[in-house]
Length: 320
Image 1: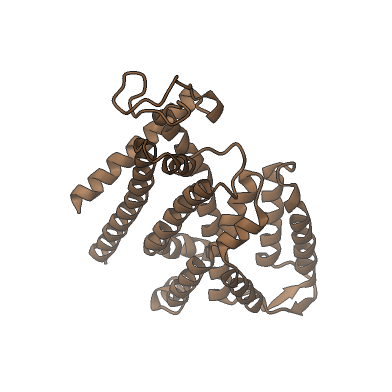
Image 2: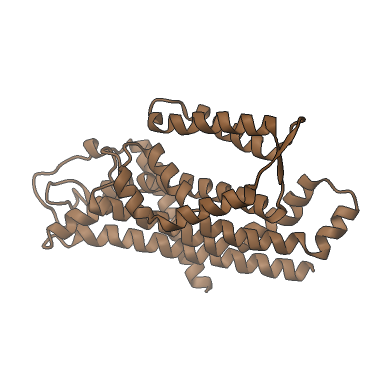
């Protein structure tokens, strides 16, 4: 286990260095130099060889690192945000009666947010985040005034059921986003249901535990209880689910690139390199190196998150 953790850390460190090199060299698909012909690996001109068009494989692999991270990491954070928010609302079963001011504010911000989705490339990202924050504030912060009986848990359950009934890849193929922002919101906004259900069960166990009753009896504010006693422990237990989700986003990015659909036209990653390499099977190095990059990255994510979970459980056990 220690050897696998060490190898995983070395591989992720290499990816981090490759990310820095891709930024320093400003590597883009149109700026990858073309050599006269297909060069096999080991040449002084191209260490990992070139593809059928003469493009340097090593530079293409470097460009694939930011292409992967620009989709996987933001989509993971969006999924985690939606999962924890829905789990907290369901576990606490709060807002059974929603004030009219909250309802109006939530409806207005929600409608504006939905109407602005087709204009994602035009609207600034901070404006969309502000609208989303306003919508969730309307659901979580009670305002004075008369109240209406609303079944927020039922609405969240219906949303989860709708997302589970629609295949994610089919949704990507049908919408075919034209920008990274649209694709990130599609990936993150449709992949949080399983993570949210697991978080909900963990939160329910915590709110029913004697630990929660003890800290509440001491008069500790709810924010400190959630921060110190719930969310830290919850993130430790969510490591396997986060590993599956992050690995899934990496595989989806490579799959969409391999199929040539659902990605912006300027995208160039390991999936596109793998597809072109398989189309020219005599150039074995064109598909071998990108496939190894995808495989090693997914395995490294799993190994490190599982190791971090075990160490966290061990420290919690020793502390107790």
